[in-house]
Length: 128
View 1 (cartoon, rainbow, N blue to C red):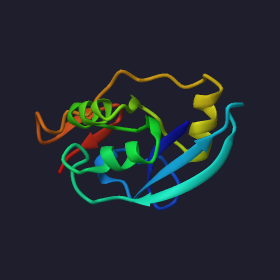
View 2 (spheres, rainbow, N blue to C red):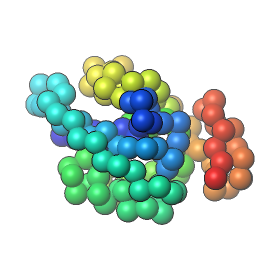
View 3 (spheres, one colour):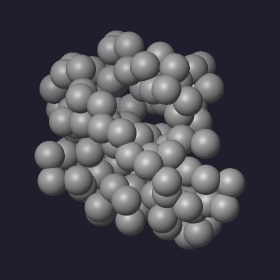
View 4 (tube, rainbow, N blue to C red):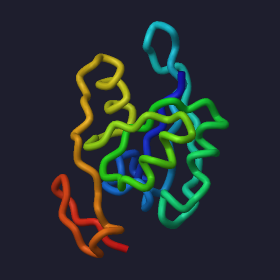
């Protein structure tokens, strides 16, 4: 299994999926341990309009652990066979470890920046 995390340049989960610098892709063993890491540069722009979902799916990603993410991006990722967990923050490797321990749950909150240009959600402000 592989898990992707949109990150900033200092390995922190980015507050907004479509604005991240990189995607850290973690390879996970059958024993739920991290066995590898591949960093994919971000294609700058809106996550729901880029082809990152197909790139991640082609790499075998099944889970994306995100900070803030819009419904459009979630739909594109889901259609590519990738489940999304929202509301994550902190160091990407630590977030993956928490997920593997079952200590991480979806916040249920999506970023609505496409519906309103400046919307507060999950403690951050989304805007283009």
